[in-house]
Structures are given as C-alpha cells and as structure tokens.
Amino acid sequence: MSDHAGPVLITGADVVGTGAADILVRDGAIAEIGTNLDAAGATRVDADGLVALPGLVDLHTHLREPGREDAETIATGSAAAAAGGFTSVFAMANTNPVTDTAEAAERIAELGERVGLVDVHPIGAVTKNLAGEELAELGLMARSRAAVRVFSDDGKCVHDSRLMRRALEYVKAFDGVVSQHAQDPNLADGQACCHEGEISGRLGLPGWPGVAEEVIVARDVMLARHTGSRVHVAHASTAGTVEVLRWAKSLGIAVTAEATPHHLMLPTDLVESYDPVYKVNPPLRPSEDIEAVREALADGTIDIVATDHAPHARHDKEHAFADAVFGMLGLEQALAVVHTTMVATGCMTWQQVADAMSTKPAAIARLGSHGQGLVAGAPANITLFDPSVTVTVNKDDSKSLSRNNPWHGRTLEGAVVSTYLRGRRTFHDGEVQQ
Image (tube, rainbow, N blue to C red; front, top):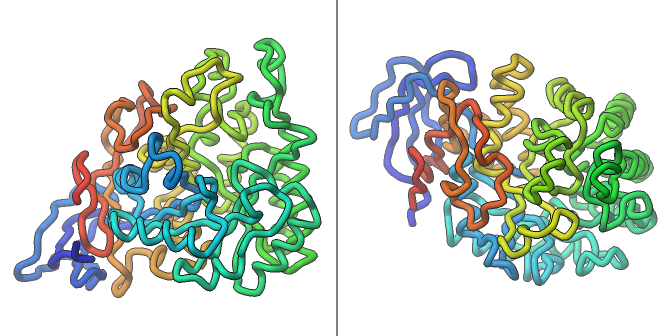
C-alpha cells in the first residue's frame, strides 16, 4: 500500500472555520492553500459546505488486540477511527498480554503500520502487568522503535503514591507523560458502577463518588509539581476535578486533561434503564458535572477530547448492569458529539476543536507527524466534516466489531464525509478506503 496517492485538489472547503478555500495536496503533504487553485492531473474533490479540519488524534483508544480479537482488532479499530475522522490513535496497554515491554509495544506499532488506515501508537503500561506493584520497562519502551512517550495503566489507577512518584521521575528523562485513570480504590472499588447519589441509592447500584477521582487528581498534580514532570488526567468527569485542574494550571504545574464525548453529553439518569451500554468508568455524571466539563473544555482547562473507545463482545456486555464490563464505543461519533454539544451551541469554534482534537493531543504525546494544522508543508492529514446534516446513529452501521454504542438511536448534528492520511483517502461517504 503506497503511503500517499497522486495529487488531490479539495475545493471550496471551510478551512477550520476561517472561510472557503482550496487545499492542494501533493506527495502526501499540503502543497498550497488558497482560492481558485488549479493543478493539472489532480483528483478534484468538491468540498463546498464541508469544514476541513486537521486529521484528528485520539490519545485514548482501546483496540483489544492482542488477546480480545472477538471485541476489536487493530484492523477494525483503525477502520472505526478512519470513519470518525482520525488519522492517529494511541492504543491503551490493557491488552493480553499487557503492553509492558519494548517487544509488545513494537508489535502494536507494526500491526498498525500493516493495516495502514491510521497511525497506531502504543501506550505503555506504567506497571508490570498493570498490577500496580513494580514499574514496567518504561525506558526500554521509550527507546524502542515504537518510541513510546505515553504511559498508562488505564482501567486501573496507579494508586500507590510512591510508585506514581517514581513513574513521573522516570518518564521525565525522555519527556514522557503518565496518563492517570484517577480512581481511589478505597473510595470507589471495582464494584462501583454508578455515580454515587440519589439514583445509585434508589437502583441499589454500588456508588462511584466524584471525590474518588478528585483526590487522585489532586495528589497527582502535587506529585507533578514535586517532580517537575508531566501528568495527564484521563477522562475527567467531575466539577471537582475541573476545580483542581484550574488551580494546578494557575500555578504552572505541568498537567493536561481530557474529556470524553460521553462525559460531554450523557447524564447519569440514563443508568435508570439498567442498560449495560451505559456502564462506563468513570461513570456518567449529573448535569452539573457535564456543564462543568463542557465549560472547562471551552476555556482550555480541559485540554483535549479523547474517546476512551472501549469495544466489548456481546457476551461480556449483555449482563445485569452490575455484572457487565465497563466501557462504550467512541471513535465514530466523537466529532459529531463535539459539534452537537460544543460548536452548534456556540461554546467552541472550529479552531478550538482542531486544537482539542488534533494539535494538543499530538503535542501531549510529543507526536510531530500529526497536529500541525492545515498549513502548507504539513502532512496532508485532513478530515472533511458536514455540519449541516443530522444523523440518527445505528449501531449496526459501525466499523467496529462491537456494538456497545451509547449513541444508538440518538440524533447527532454533523457527520464525517472523508478522511485523508498523508494525502491518501482512508474513508469516504460511509466506506473505508483500503
């Protein structure tokens, strides 16, 4: 598979919300952006009415391979990512075996290259086998061909303070970052599955209080200040976490954070249906937390949107709520959710979306090949999005192997039309382009 196709001329696109222009792509890079461009032999793409964004970067994806290919593979997850407008994804380490060695990380990167629909970057585990007892091979993973810079035990919290401090000190040497699943196990154990409050009490579901997230975020920002290292807060979900982040950033502490599409839109009330598709970790939160997370994303306190795309096989998800596994799909609808909740409501501009879903996640991961924006000379990683359509989501249309789609039956504003990876179209009009 060639890395890029012949010249492409995208005409009339609204370039990151700044107005209509043409984008000339040649040899996998953006050659020129302007009006009334022409290029002999170029494939012309009419993008009138479409918004052109830099290819999206997801800092939080579960691809399940190796070990759970019944739920997702790198190939199917890559297809879902391309359909969602992504050109790069970061694959979490909680596979089987865990991505806690250089060899495992290189294998993930190699499989991603072979598929070729998006750039797949492995995230390394912080601790061996995600056991929370001993640091994994952080330095070897960083020095490997996969050049790992993001480390996470996602799904489990690095709750031992001394171990977290040592991880932060270690990754500082190669400018890495630890992405923390903030969940104090003494305040919210593995059974906790519903936001602690009136609904959890009435339904008889084990409560997951917001403070279980907030105390870990508070501890970690202090450890980041102490070590002079970088920490990233995965799936920030509460107003209290937002307060801690604002305070930490006011002091110049090197902390970044992400919001998921589901924490931007879906309230804890949905759990009243006992539908296990709405079981996620951290749990769906009340409207006041959703509003706080939206405001924090709009003002930059929360830096990025990351999907936490978590596919599961039916036999793991279709159980009583308390017994089902955590997680929901996110890649394919992420941009439409952000458009619906943040852009169409006037809370964010397209430039802010480009920052939150491309530029900043690439910067956090120290990924120079993505996130450069739509400028001449940059790699031609481009997403074309139609903001004018409304789409009622059907889970059976998903490119993912799994069907635990929380957006099923919900109408969202806007849809991805095309995705280009270094000038080669990977998705167009509902179909993956191999």
